[in-house]
Length: 334
Image (tube, rainbow, N blue to C red; front, side, top):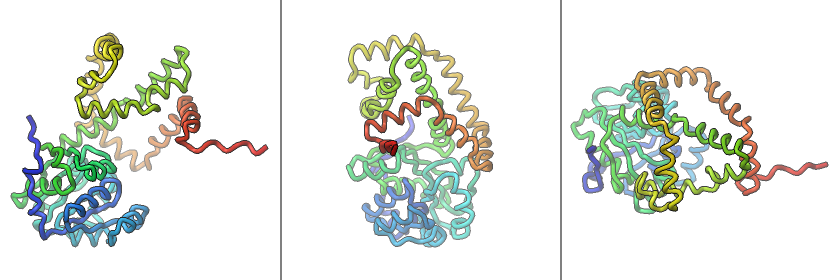
């Protein structure tokens, strides 16, 4: 079984006298910075002049440029968006790295695909929250923490794991548990989760029920818009993927556990999952992603437009306006 680390396994004393530089005050950066500050760490913030900079100042930080923060920090948490990190590293971080520094990532992507290749005389670690940025802060404030995957890519100091655990504890993760992983494993699992075709399966279910004579509003409400799936996800988190069925009706238990197997093609689904994994491992997805970035994500925008034109989206918009989740359409002035 993979090893988990908890509060007792981590020593915040390792960070005493260190300056922790948060490089990027976005969703993860803001939450991790606030958690670190609340845990008594010396934190500085580096960010470009954008809306996140305004948020940082509103939170009481004296904002630095990314280059200045990187130069002043002993422990550098690179938390800008994945696609921006190679440029940010080359322009503002690389030149100020010094022996003994710790460079920490929240995702293994750029190290695994060698978009960033740090010098050999620094520690390179990963603390990757399995939680959205807002949740990193919310669970910390609630006192229950959040899980993370952690890894060591370079151990120049021979204490890289200790620093990694100290960072994980300081941001609130070892309270729930930090799982020992690797940059490769975290990247594979994260990318797999991010491009499985669940959205298109949902839309196919909508189309099938519509064909069966159900109203669009009833379908959308039941499939996702009611918010019932949020509670269902919480049951999965707290009880387990299959154990949560104990909270469902007997009809639902029979349907989900027994009858659904008649329609599930395990071998077909497994083959599809293997194809996704293969495309990640052999670099096909990564190469396609890089090509799309060079094309200014044109395929993404084209696909968004195609999806927006689907009849389900118009029905969803009408329902969400009726429910007050979106502004009502302006009345005809005639």
